[in-house]
Image 1 (tube, helix red, strand yellow):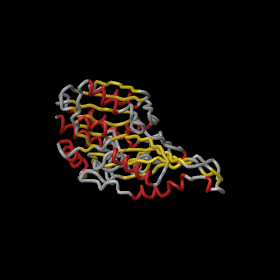
Image 2 (cartoon, rainbow, N blue to C red):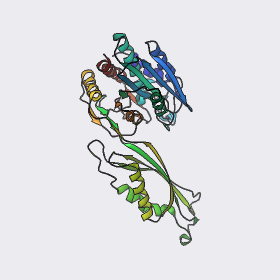
Image 3 (spheres, rainbow, N blue to C red):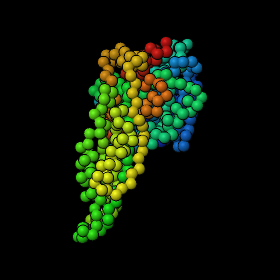
Length: 376
């Protein structure tokens, strides 16, 4: 095992880069890439730092995309070790961002260093797109960089996103698409009153209860050959009552659709509203469409990625479009072939996030092989 990628992963974990703060991670990455001939450019939008690094000026352009930001670790005392002090224990590296996704970032860099050393006159172009705004609102990160690249006619042909995609073994799952994400925040209005006089009030919690049952039992679509069915989840219910003897006057409900290409956001909005209307609710809804579904059909990038995983890890990767969203949703609409491949995702966003100490090097070897197959 080559320890270089593990050591770089540890260096990145030491930076407490909670969204949208980069905390110098991109400076470390840029410095390493500049040393092997990459031109680097910091692109800051709002409070978000982004890095665009490119080597070469001709097509095809192969991009490795990822994020330096991490979710909050929560209460540090709940962790076995300090979440921002990388710690190796029993063959695993612990730390916030270890799997999501600082190991992938480190693997991008060490793979690029080896590739350039072995192929200094490679064909095409190799680039990295790194943001600190993936775990948060995702409005000043990859989407803004893509807009800037399009304005100057830089076209991405192939893109590998380093999201943690693997289930049981590193490399066992390649994401070649993701469902869309549509969130809603609804306020249901009732009439506030005393709990002892319910006939003088209207409890919005009681009104919403049967609606929740209907919504959770609704089959929004059946999915299709590329995507699993649309799912609906309620993430928050909160009334405005501050006392046990007060019937609330309003109820806030937040929810999310992860939807397939078999249904449109407009159809989902209409179906949910019709359910509210059928139950005579008085309500307002605000919507947030954070991403449409994207899908990359089998072609050169998928073939190359499968071959690289097979050759380097001895694993037959399967294709999948399940799980959450990723920044691939901003890159695929440009016409690029996009896949996602990274470490196991069992501990991401959890206390004691970790990955096997061999995984950073494993990823680096796979990414290097992809570079070789596309650009040499």
